[in-house]
Structure formats: C-alpha cells, structure tokens
Length: 347
Ligand code: SAH
Ligand code: SF4
Image (tube, rainbow, N blue to C red; front, top):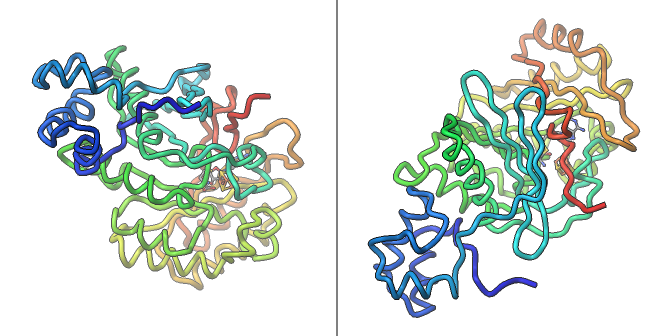
C-alpha cells in the first residue's frame, strides 16, 4: 500500500511550492526546504534549521525525503556496485555505480520492467509494472550521493540512463529529473556528462529531449529492418530509417556533436563481415555525425544468444570505412550489473 506521504525528491521548486500551498504550508517554507533537499542532501526535515519548528514537525505527515530502502548490495571485482532499491509500494529497481580512473558513473533506471521486450535483454523478460516517478528516478542519484559522502568518496561525474526500462516511454518524469540534474544552481551536471539511451522511441520524445542537449545513445543492433525487428520488436513501429531521421533531427536541435549508436554483437546473428559493411554503408548513407559503440553481449540464464568473438574484426571494418567506433568494455558483469542484465522481479 502506498503511504500517504509523497516522495518529493524529484519536484521542481515550482511544483514543491504548489504542493506545499495545497497542504497548508507556505511558498516560503518550500523555498527554504528545497535547498536542504538538493544542495545539502538532507535526509530528514528535522535538520532544516531555518524552517520553523512547527513546519518541520508537520511536514513528515505529508511528505517524505527518505531514500528508497536498499534490499541487496553487490560489489564486483572491478569495483562496480549494484543495489536493489525498494520503493514505498514494494516495487524494486536496480541501479549501478561504476567507478573509473577519471570518472564515477551511475546508471539509473526509469521503469519497473520494460514493455519493449528486446530478445537479448534480461530486463525485457520482466513484466512491465510501472513508470518511476521523477522523485524515484532522482532518489537513485541521492542514494549514490549519500554513499559517496559517507565514505568520503569522489563525487559522481556522469549519469547514464541505461538501467531498467525505456527512458523515452517515461519522458515526462525523465525530463523533470533532467531539469533538476542540469540546473547549475541545483545539481549542476553538464550536458555532456549525461547520456540517455533509447531503443528508438521516435514519437516526438527524441525531439523534446533535444532541448536538454544531453548525449543521446540509440540502440541500433542491426543494419536491416528484418534483423532489427527480430531482435527488437519496437522496430515494427519505428524502423531504422525513422530512427536515423530522428537522430539527425536530434543533432540539429540539440547542438551535440554526435549521436552514439549502440550495436550489440551477437554470435551468428549480426556479427558477420557483411553486417559490418552494411552498417557502415547505412550510417554513411544517412550522413549522420555519429559514433558506434560495439557492445559485448552480457550473458544471462535462459538466453538463446551467445557473445560474439568477432568484435575486433567488426571494429576494424567499421574504422576502415571511416566510422568512429569503439568496443565498450563491460563493467560489473560478474555481479550481473552490466547492460541488459538488470532485473528486479522477485523470483
Ligand atoms: N531501454 C534503453 C536503455 C536501457 S538498456 C535502451 O534499450 O537503449 C541499455 C543498453 O543495454 C542498450 O543499448 C541495450 O540494447 C543494451 N543491452 C540490453 N541487453 C543487453 C545484454 N544482454 N548485453 C549487453 N547489452 C545489452
Ligand atoms: Fe527495454 Fe532497453 Fe531492455 Fe530493450 S534493451 S527490453 S528497450 S531495457
């Protein structure tokens, strides 16, 4: 059952003022509470010393700033950490922290389960339950910020929306979270440190995302509609040329330098020399400023796919055709924290 206290970690100041007014508080109260939540990372209303005591005492009857409960925590040999967070209605998501020499990246989920059902993705096998609210999206960042602060660790530098779910099917809440993350007076992430990955939902959301100017990654995974539709049923609705046209518009409206295409190499499915040549031809033909990230398949129990061993040949072919390409190294795969391995269903 949902408790009556509403989680307010992802509300803008304007939204917070409205909620406060509706519940008998003042907009000045909201103005004072807001920086405590976002800049001082307060975990309870008690500590908000400039908020009148009677207000501090009454706020918890209506609102909550508690972090979701951490149900399980795993640490990989490479330092990657994965946690399962539980929200107030008992639903859970996974979120991942990936430390690197120069940066600390967090991978954030936007939905519980995923409706898109890509064949190679573990999340896609989990029944879609619901969208996360903007507060639940933000709460994952607060969770990792708390941990970094408590352990005097270095701060979070990058955010990737590559966790569970399809971000652009929850665009309103995604955009609210992005507003808070990018605002220089609030969380102050720069646009090029945030990446949104999409399976290619081109119903207008990509164009709307462009106004945020964040990095866009599109899961392509095949160069023919037939193959892509086999791997990703969404291709029947939005095919490759729809997706590439949207990518072109994104470049035009967002002012980012390039779009990233993710290409998961699956043995015997999309990893032949010919697949690489066709991919290069497709991208050249469309003339889009892009980079290709080749992804190695992360295994999960019950999958029909196998990782490809042809990554380097594929890479060489794309490079020889003038396509900027890298093979993305997989992180945290020993704890199932890598892309496409996240799943939160209790089994
Ligand atoms: N729904 C969005 C974002 C989450 S998935 C999307 O599909 O883009 C993040 C990335 O992980 C996507 O590129 C996805 O195709 C990839 N992925 C899914 N399953 C995978 C697996 N088993 N191994 C490696 N990458 C996978
Ligand atoms: Fe959903 Fe992305 Fe997984 Fe496809 S790859 S099922 S869109 S989370």
